[in-house]
Each structure stands twice: as C-alpha cells, then as structure tokens.
Length: 370
Image (spheres, rainbow, N blue to C red):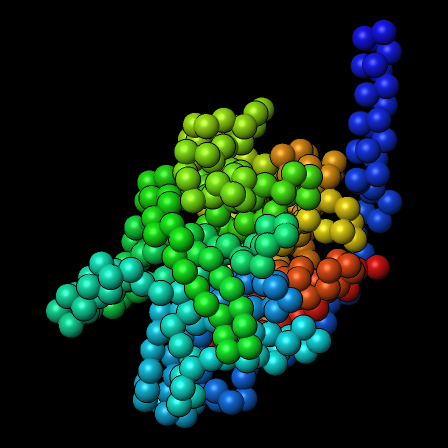
C-alpha cells in the first residue's frame, strides 16, 4: 500500500509540474519597438536616472534615483535636487508619467532616516559627501496585499561620484490619487561586505507566495527567500546554496549557489564571467511562458538587454543560455539601468523595458512575444 501511494503521488506531482510549465513556445520569438521618452509634461525640466518599479494596487510606478529640476533644459541652472523620486506611469501609455511635487519639482520618494540626513548636513559643504538612496530593484506585492515592498541600497556619494555602499533598507509603498506613500519598514537589512539580497531584483514565488530576493554577487545571480509575513525579521530569511535552502548565506564567490552566471563577451568574442553577476535587471514569473524570465543589462557597455528563462519552471532549476533581447540606441554615453516591467501586461505577451539614456532621460520599448 505505501508503494502504491508513493507511485500515485509521484504521478500527480509529475502531472502538476507539466501543467505548471511548458516549453512549447520556447525559445521565444519576439519583436521590439521603441516607444519613446518617458516624462510628465507638467514637470518639463526634470532630469533623472535609474528606474525599476512595479504594479502597486493597480498603478504602475517607477522609482528613480538622482532627480534634478532645472530652470530650463539639462544644462540650465539647478533649481531643485533630490536623491530619488517616484512617478506613476500610464498603463496604456507608459511614457506618460504623473509626478508629485510643487513648482515643477518632484518630491523625495524614499525618505531618509534622521541619522542619514544629519550625515549629509554635516559633510556636504565641507567634504561634498552625502547619503544617497538609489532604488534599482523591482517593487513586489505579496498575494492578497495592497502594499508593495522594495529592497533599496543606501550609500555615500562624494563630489567625484565615488560611491560606498552602507546597507540596504526595506521600504513599504502604498499608492493613492494624491501620490505614493513610502515607509522604511526595515531601516537596515543587509550590510556592506555581505551578499546584497534583493538589491538586484525581487519577486513573489508563483508556488508558495514567498518573497524571493535576487543578488548579483561575485560571479552570478543568487537568491534568498522569506515569508511575506516575516520579511522584517532577518532571522527568518533562508538562502539557496545550490542544493538546499539554508539559514547560512553562501560565500559571495560560490559558483554552486548561483541560479545562473552571467557571461560578458568582449568585442573580439572572448567571454568571461562578469564579476557582479549583472548590472541591472529584473527576474519574474511569466504567465505567458509559464516559467521564470530574467531580463537584464550584464555590465558589458554595449547597451543591450539580455534574456534567459528557467528550463524547468523553477527559480533554482536549470536556466537557458543567455540571449540578446534588444540593443538600445546609445546617445552621448552608454545606456544603463535597464529594467523590465511585467505589470503593464499581466498576460505576459508583451513586456515593457526602460533604460537611462544620456544619464538623465528614461527611454522605453515594448517587447511583443509571438
């Protein structure tokens, strides 16, 4: 009898797995169309970089990094500056943004803690050094909730642009018609010298609803998980080692703990493995392909979105080889901060992309899968 039950359970699990995942339309074929520059016409002189965001209680939002407001044009005198800002993006017309602020200047999106503001006050005039919050990871909303969660880096920046990571912070984001509201629910989570889980991307598991935190660490992408009710308690996080989930994180240079490594090829065709695992991007479950997708810039300065997918429908399973998705057009400097936004089309047939152009604009494109 136990043998019969075991065989029946195995058959049921196999059928369930087949229902969850199919490779009938993979590898994908697709077209990509650039759709323009994102802006809010009511805030005409705003220049910023970064990006990434998510669908929060029915609204698609984008969270930016350094945000400058000038008196007119990118080279005009600076009227207002903030370390980050948040805009709503029209789901049907993604390049149409809605900013929140006054006198044409967006408000600060993710707030500073008092000690962080005090550091900037004490050091900016004398050392030209400040604390910055540069969001670069996706916002995720656990099942049956209306508050999104993000994992953002806090760092010091000096006048020469040199940065030094201090720690990451967890934010909770709610939305209303009057703008987003952001709370630092965990002021400090992971610290410099550790694997910065959640700093690259975050997602919600399609199987058990756990929060998945992805890190670009050492030589590839690594993942941790935590229940959505426990994300404020770091002792509840577990880390993928390559064979199991452990309460002890792997070393940053562990190759077995990678869910995939990210090759970077030179113009001559020579490839190695990028030391940071990927410079920016997003990992998410696609209902269209019924598997996990990774869309990212890999750090090689060729302005190209890369793409890969899970071969068995599992985040910790085997992944496909890296493919080129879309080569963006370069302006006066390399493009960066490439992101994907699955929330605009929840069927997964189309996918919105954004990237920072010329260091101060957001360009967008739409991928249509066949």
